[in-house]
Length: 143
Image (cartoon, rainbow, N blue to C red):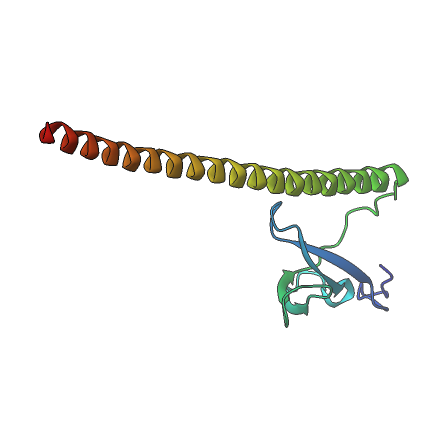
């Protein structure tokens, strides 16, 4: 971040936050955050609207404070690649979990349907057996 002699930012430093709830819900939306608004040792809370979100008027409240870095870290392309790779793995896992959940739900519905059909058949057989028993019992009394 570019700062003046006193250490205050001289231009905006925009960052994009991807907001996720958990693995089941995935990414809820994205919010733009201006890091230059967070001064050194000043705690600042902002209400950021979520973009690309299924929920209308959704927002996230972010509270941050800036801390002076002891030494400017060197940017490592390898680190960025690892972070991107990690995110891709997480997204792939999320998609796999969603597919597995749908498949299991479908299999469960089929099993429940089959069991309900068996129960209905058994109830029908029971009623038929009761009817036959009553008929047989009535016939034997007549003789």
